[in-house]
Image (cartoon, rainbow, N blue to C red; front, side, top):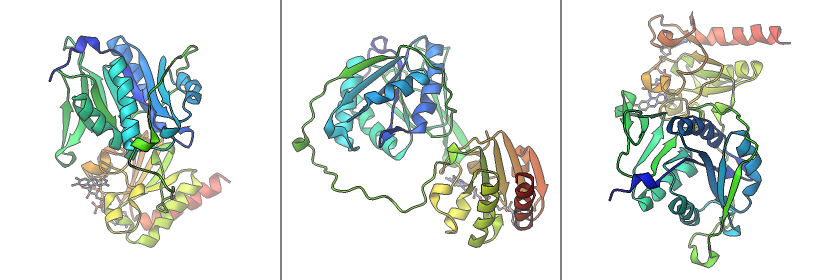
Length: 337
Ligand code: FAD
């Protein structure tokens, strides 16, 4: 089924939240969405549901949201797919946004697919770039994502159906403030009955896995298989702590069981763009680069002078990472005292 695309307008960003806090990726998408809305000549809007979400409007205005659509209900206190889907669907069907951006988080991925199915439109998952096709009359959204194991980038667009939907990887875009004074708040009512929802949340259990949002850090010290053994993760930790940053790894290191997946950078891990990315014992495979190549300064440490990581490095150190990492820790430890 094709839609009457002229009925759809504005860029909408889904505001993901947990325990009264907005997820950072939503602010990143508001920033990017602002630029897209300017390109198309429409408004940038935020939308969400929850039990107490109006409180977010001030922060959303700081990031330039012109309108904020929301539904509040005690039934929406904790995330469950069905009530979230139905209430979000109500907002989308009523106001018909042209573009919907959702963070490619666990929650975002869970909600985006049933929404797209119900709306009978396309969804591009895990997008890493967003642009407008100025050649097309409808100014279609061009959504780029890696494909074939990261060896090709596919540009996907959705010319006949609306909304154009995309989940976007956290950390791909920067979040920058652009305050506006008068955000328009649109509260909608949608009836939800707890009795009709089959899923119940009995207890929330905090995962003991080491969860970290790498994209929050300005300095990342990352290690690859070249660090040799699990115990050497400490060398990454020590340097990261000295520089006020955090540590990360390549997929090989996760596969070896030396570090949890939550520390992985790359195509199937997290995307980061810190001010400084130190890559120690990382060869520079395309799938790793996909997650860190937009870092401002890349310092590569590798004992192979031909390692591909040197092709994108700002500074390169040819040598043994096991020796060099502690020396850097000592050097900066003394300097920063
Ligand atoms: P290697 O490629 O084995 O490189 C080790 C490097 O360490 C070498 O360059 C070597 O010269 C150097 N070295 C060895 N000893 C020392 C030493 N003592 N001091 C200094 N240097 C030393 N990879 C990711 O990282 N993230 C992803 O998200 C990701 N997703 C993937 C998705 C798919 C579908 C596929 C197919 C692959 C993916 N990969 C990913 C894997 C990727 O292709 C590479 O295999 C991986 O990045 C290599 O990790 P590495 O650089 O640590 O190891």
